[in-house]
Image (cartoon, rainbow, N blue to C red; front, top):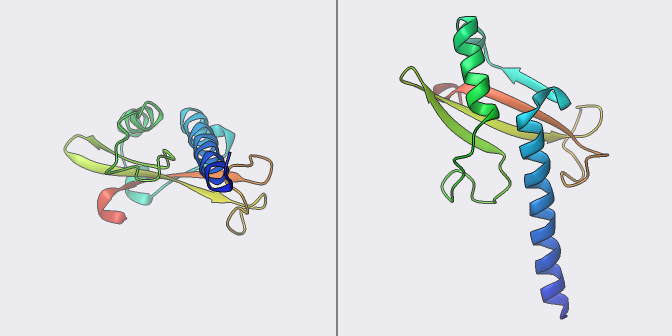
Length: 119
């Protein structure tokens, strides 16, 4: 295996690891932190719950919304309003960016759900 092929394989495996960690976290946001913006917080409880369930169950990843194939962003529509969700990577103290999003031992994930017009 050439060095170039080895680096490509390592990059593919790294992306697959990040994608897997992001999917697991999105399906169980209590494994990290979930943040909602004031406009999402202002929704009635049942609408907030429906929105969270749409994010947890999101699977419509494509080249347009997931160019790096890491499953770290998505858009959902509810009651005619567009919402975005995104996952950011922090260090263990939620202080700075993660040194390695593929390593769950040094990374804390934060899921943010917002109205599209707040982005």
